[in-house]
Length: 496
Image (cartoon, rainbow, N blue to C red; front, side, top):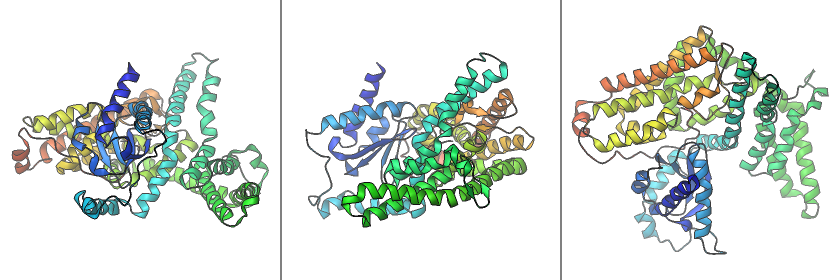
């Protein structure tokens, strides 16, 4: 029955995005089905948003993204891919844009407007951060699974239950993290145009136990030194070396020379340079994050919680993904994520206030009712792009709620209740199973729940009293069509 439901969702989406021949590529992240389109004008946005399974739509310079929510997207995507393949004639490749499209047709589709939007969203910084995010996002499911197992193992260890199972769970939870550098290297080479297995091979040097016998910069290296940042740098270097070899090495010996030179040259630079440098950077990141929350306390939490939604809007939150991963690798959890998750609490509170302030706007209230369950679970895009951002002022007051929740968690951290998340990706209520820290699970859960409650209440109050002008209330407090979501810049794992 579940498979039939997922296939029905895929079948409903496909004709609304122009059919099989209008799709050039398909992928998905934690919450979104991401498709590249040949002709954007063939998409029926309104009909897509009206589908019960669709929580919202987001468009960036490269992809059209349909928000389906965690879990659902992973089940719908294979069904969607199968329908696309079935809908294409045998041996018929995906349609490509060609000279048949006239200048008049391009003008009719608003090509100039689309190019302007792409120019705004395709800055070098955002494109680079998007590629870095593409390296880490595929790792999130494993991080979540291993993180939850690690939390369960911690409970068993502290309570003394099932002692025979504890070592097995520890191995299951730690196995992936012990080799995460290899996966980062593989994905990095794949993303930046190299041979993935060569990127993984070079990154594997970082976690090889025998690296402890090597001296660099007057000291013994240690397995794992440099972590995911070292793996990222090593694989990027391997890609450049491989591309250089492909350009100059004769084809007759390419299969022998290129892999050898790539691994050897990149490996030596990694051992005698990148591991040490990346290790210093990783240590500095960990020390700074610990100092920031321990010393900055409420102020640091206020700034982090208040600015996270704007960072998501600008696409700059993607820079935090390798930082979160580094902290998890070093300490077993990232202390930043519970603070940043408060932005989602402020967003939920703001949406509830909009619901109360506009009792006669049935269409907007319907949108909020359908998006709130996902918002409580940390999927904020439907509320952001369908409610608060188009309204303007409620987006600002949602940030105020996030700042208040972040300040609460930061203040508790300053008092000595330090905790974090053992994985990235989930947020809201979905983060509860992933919380970990030296103060004990009970206190960690209580502080995080308190932060969410503060975010909900302050986001609600700020929006209820300051989120609307009199003119806005007059214009919006009537039955009307749902407010269209704006086209935001590219965003990735919501995490708030």
